[in-house]
Image 1 (spheres, rainbow, N blue to C red):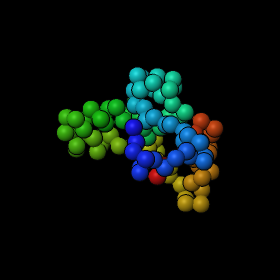
Image 2: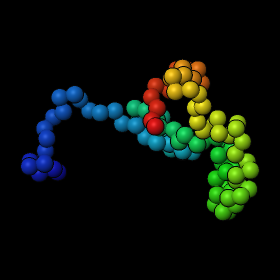
Image 3: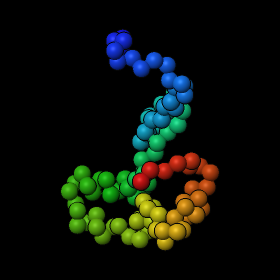
Image 4: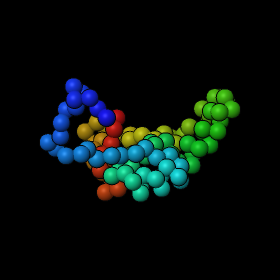
Length: 101
Protein backbone atom coordinates (compact mmCIF):
# COMPACT_ATOMS: atom_id res chain seq x y z
CA UNK A 1 0.00 0.00 0.00
CA UNK A 2 2.96 2.26 -0.67
CA UNK A 3 2.36 5.06 -3.22
CA UNK A 4 4.57 4.77 -6.32
CA UNK A 5 6.42 7.93 -5.32
CA UNK A 6 7.78 6.18 -2.19
CA UNK A 7 8.27 2.71 -3.69
CA UNK A 8 12.00 2.07 -4.28
CA UNK A 9 11.32 -1.09 -6.30
CA UNK A 10 12.84 -4.51 -5.71
CA UNK A 11 15.97 -4.73 -3.61
CA UNK A 12 18.80 -6.06 -5.80
CA UNK A 13 20.32 -7.71 -2.71
CA UNK A 14 17.19 -9.61 -1.69
CA UNK A 15 15.31 -9.36 1.56
CA UNK A 16 17.35 -8.36 4.62
CA UNK A 17 17.59 -10.87 7.47
CA UNK A 18 15.17 -10.24 10.32
CA UNK A 19 16.63 -10.32 13.84
CA UNK A 20 14.49 -10.03 16.98
CA UNK A 21 15.66 -8.90 20.39
CA UNK A 22 14.63 -11.40 23.03
CA UNK A 23 14.53 -11.10 26.80
CA UNK A 24 12.62 -13.84 28.53
CA UNK A 25 11.29 -17.24 27.64
CA UNK A 26 8.40 -16.21 25.37
CA UNK A 27 10.34 -13.76 23.19
CA UNK A 28 13.14 -16.32 22.86
CA UNK A 29 10.60 -18.87 21.66
CA UNK A 30 9.15 -16.37 19.15
CA UNK A 31 12.60 -15.42 17.84
CA UNK A 32 13.58 -19.07 17.41
CA UNK A 33 10.43 -19.75 15.38
CA UNK A 34 10.14 -16.73 13.10
CA UNK A 35 13.41 -14.78 12.96
CA UNK A 36 16.66 -15.27 11.08
CA UNK A 37 18.60 -14.46 14.24
CA UNK A 38 18.25 -13.31 17.84
CA UNK A 39 19.74 -10.32 19.64
CA UNK A 40 20.31 -11.12 23.30
CA UNK A 41 20.18 -8.48 25.97
CA UNK A 42 23.74 -8.04 27.16
CA UNK A 43 22.75 -7.88 30.81
CA UNK A 44 20.80 -11.13 31.04
CA UNK A 45 22.49 -12.99 33.88
CA UNK A 46 21.25 -14.14 37.26
CA UNK A 47 23.11 -11.28 38.91
CA UNK A 48 21.53 -8.75 36.55
CA UNK A 49 18.09 -9.97 37.66
CA UNK A 50 19.17 -9.33 41.41
CA UNK A 51 20.45 -5.81 40.38
CA UNK A 52 17.25 -5.13 38.36
CA UNK A 53 15.16 -5.84 41.45
CA UNK A 54 17.23 -3.42 43.50
CA UNK A 55 16.89 -0.81 40.78
CA UNK A 56 13.11 -1.04 40.84
CA UNK A 57 13.29 -0.58 44.62
CA UNK A 58 15.65 2.41 44.19
CA UNK A 59 18.23 0.70 46.41
CA UNK A 60 21.19 2.34 44.68
CA UNK A 61 23.68 2.19 47.56
CA UNK A 62 23.05 -1.52 48.13
CA UNK A 63 23.38 -2.15 44.39
CA UNK A 64 26.83 -0.55 44.36
CA UNK A 65 28.10 -2.96 47.00
CA UNK A 66 27.09 -5.94 44.83
CA UNK A 67 28.94 -4.89 41.69
CA UNK A 68 32.15 -6.83 42.17
CA UNK A 69 34.88 -7.43 39.62
CA UNK A 70 33.15 -10.73 38.76
CA UNK A 71 29.88 -8.91 38.01
CA UNK A 72 31.71 -6.31 35.93
CA UNK A 73 33.43 -9.10 33.97
CA UNK A 74 30.02 -10.69 33.27
CA UNK A 75 28.93 -7.49 31.50
CA UNK A 76 32.14 -6.40 29.84
CA UNK A 77 35.32 -7.50 28.14
CA UNK A 78 38.28 -6.41 30.25
CA UNK A 79 41.54 -6.61 28.36
CA UNK A 80 44.13 -4.50 26.61
CA UNK A 81 42.76 -2.97 23.38
CA UNK A 82 44.95 -5.17 21.20
CA UNK A 83 43.58 -8.28 22.97
CA UNK A 84 39.84 -7.51 22.84
CA UNK A 85 39.08 -9.60 19.73
CA UNK A 86 40.94 -12.63 21.12
CA UNK A 87 39.18 -12.25 24.48
CA UNK A 88 35.75 -12.13 22.78
CA UNK A 89 36.59 -15.25 20.72
CA UNK A 90 37.81 -17.05 23.86
CA UNK A 91 34.70 -16.17 25.87
CA UNK A 92 32.04 -16.71 23.22
CA UNK A 93 33.63 -19.14 20.77
CA UNK A 94 31.28 -19.90 17.91
CA UNK A 95 28.01 -19.05 19.68
CA UNK A 96 28.21 -15.35 18.73
CA UNK A 97 28.81 -14.14 15.19
CA UNK A 98 28.63 -10.38 15.81
CA UNK A 99 28.63 -7.88 18.64
CA UNK A 100 27.59 -4.25 19.01
CA UNK A 101 29.33 -1.56 20.95
